[in-house]
Image (tube, rainbow, N blue to C red; front, side, top):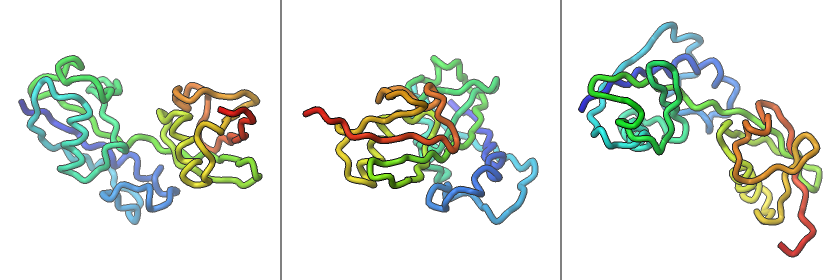
Length: 180
């Protein structure tokens, strides 16, 4: 079946201008101040039982927009989850999905040594994702990290948004003293 993807990513260009180039989708032209009401629909041929994740993979293949930086919405503006199938999301032949860039935000992580790290995250990233980034940058073992925000330790598998972590939030990493 054919579905229409309404590319509304131009709306996000201004928000991306302050981000490092490595975080920008390759299709964004940050040199342009305003792309006006430029909107580019395109067709995809899919199967009703394809997942939203599969649709994102097709978009990545067709348009070069990285999977993780895509957010798909239905015509009412509802966010479609990767595990949903098109049919379970009510998407039929000729339906239009809206493509937006997944919002990326910057948080500051204060390490046990007092060093301040800037991390680019998405609101649906989890504390486990943050810990993985800290391990990569600082070499601190995942299981030895305790992340504190707003005076409390936060759990690994919940999204940052559930803790109120947003743009410019500061989280602290402490080393667990147990033999964990």
